Image (cartoon, rainbow, N blue to C red):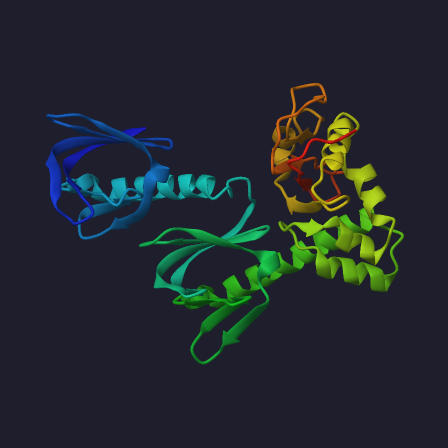
Length: 343
């Protein structure tokens, strides 16, 4: 935790100054504190910052409320503050995007042009390739990520030294990676290949009875990090559902699973999915060997008259205990009926 001294301006959405003056600044983990020489102090979560924008010896922070903070007159500490602030902000941004537990493979600085369903952006950005995601942390707008399982094509323009990634109607053009262009491309392709191989290992360990054609049909349906109706999986092979439940729902959670299944809005129509997790996160997620299902009910017992809810998600996933197997979390989603079970 370091403190810095400078001046600040607190601006409204129109750019008018609300407050200003000399101050001290402190970055403490995910917290940012601004203590003026006079007047009330300000403390907030770094996740409240939409845009972190360092400039010519000044730092602009645009908040989610529309207001902004401009820091200046930071003297010789400016570079240190910029570096520390940006690292802390990116770290908190990953937490807010629920990406903190992802294993990072490579980190690159470049220039991106983003086109997503009419929402566009272009500018410098840091790109982080993780085991299951591509994380994009722009300098002047909000961060975002693409799941590697969603990337449909990677095209390289040799003449322009430009990479183009496509996912559905979305497109990302990446340039200015300089000598690291091919390194980025190979790193990304390798991560996508490893994810696909891990998916094949996971699904084959669950369903070894599938024929080659059935297995390819299932891997085409299931994407890492996405939900799929179990009925669609059953259409590939009728044994998939019972085997899936047997191998991924632990005994302590099975009563809850059965209870939620009886409350389904459409009988037999629930969803499942899986996601890759970090090996060192296994103990935190597994909860000491017991899985957790979130839904209506009291801890430790299946309620007789649960509160009515529209949806209940279950993290009924079981991580693979074999070190040679990919670390994975299986989960279920139950769209529940709002009518009490007549039984």
